[in-house]
Image (cartoon, rainbow, N blue to C red; front, side):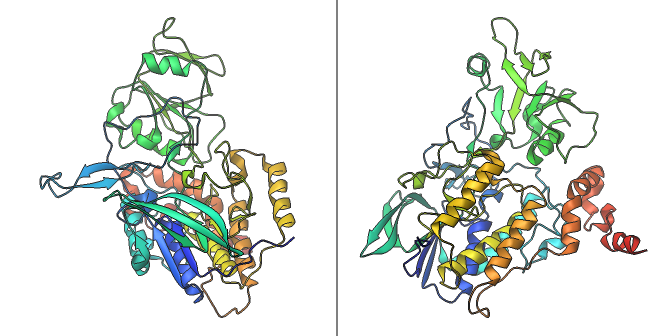
Length: 484
């Protein structure tokens, strides 16, 4: 049985004009094969998740949040203009996890597109503002392809005269008018940071009803002001969790309690925090005041704030009609080959599903493969081989969240595999091709948790650090030492 990709692909829809969608569009156009590319973006601007949206009093955290099957996002209408909208106008915005003081957890020597190193003039771990400007500049050449304020509400598959077709239904956010158009292929590149994960821990429902507003999710965190002088628990120790905890630690009652299942490679010693085990129970309000019990039996009472930094579900409501369903629990996307192609409908592809990766370059590797397959320069393996890959991945990593996780060096190996795969295409003079990771980049990736810690420990002085050498990490010196 073949790969099922039997129709010519000339007309493509891309969902999302963030870094994944823009990168994919550039690689598709470089093939010189595609007749038309439409990029649908529900926001009014480039950048995707890197756009900051101010907190809104209507932002609510569902407690618990265990259902990935949420409807498409509804916009909030925020005032525009230089004086908080005194002109009376407003614009639709969509919440993102971006917070005021965010700095990347990846140094700019790695967090860049292969053909655009412009972030090197910024601090070593750039601010969100610098990254957003970088992405806007990178996207300028595909501006003519983008339909802003256009939300994809449904994508469904159908056969037409033996050809695979996708019907994409959209809604204009501003006018609220709907429409649809037919495509040969669809690339889903709108990220997976929309539907928060907030676990159903024993007693949490009753506890939350008795203490409204105490429990929240990091999606709605914007700055530490809310936590001033409060006894605070931060649940989770991801990169964002560690960063947010350090910000909260500047104003909250000490110590900030960090509840975690395992140690974080990004953690560093600090007097403002205390590391605790998992929360196992929210104790009934009738027996104790705002109390939680941890896995080791410890109980903390009079807790003023609990912030869950526990990640997000994979959720694509516009694909709900697809059979077999790609989403069940929300912990991963099913029936995919190499985290990339839908096995049974390979004219549907996903860019950017893996986590723990260096994103922009990984998107390039994936986009290079998709562009070559859809331009008929590269063939997919038979369905049985693609099914076997998924089954082997489940056996190794399980059927949950770890399926799409690519911890170093797996993330580098995956990108290099994509480059090797794309390099096998016919007509090698065509298209864009990202480079494989170099030895120096591998060296930096291996050390970047330590680099981030060294950077953070500089305090305000970190803003002057622009190079690895200034942070105390010299690749040349390391190589010379190894060779002597």
